[in-house]
Amino acid sequence: MAVAKKKPAAPVRIDFKKEDTVKVISGRDKGKTGRVLQVSRETGKLLVEHVMMIKRHTRPNPAKQIKGGIAERESPIQASNVLIVCPGCGKAVRIAHHVDPVAGGKNHRTRVCRKCGVTLDRK
Image (tube, rainbow, N blue to C red; front, side, top):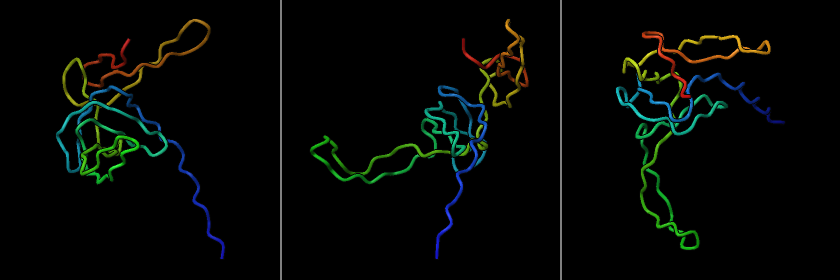
């Protein structure tokens, strides 16, 4: 009997970028804040600094200078479980988008805080 292959899920639109500061709003690490280290649009998950820490057992490998033992590292967290922290008001907020027309008939989208209106994109 043939096994049906699973279709890959469509990439999720994530409004978070690397180096953003986010706050966890649900899950076992609720209330923690951290910096985004990695964004995976294929799985819809983020890697946040000091959030969802797991213990990883590694074997020693002298050829690669790996010592071995129990190491702690971050595990990915679902993007829907975090909110971005606004640099203006310092609160966890939702993201709005402002579309500005640019020369040449193009548009430029910027991420904006829904509470205070400060631009979240770094220049």
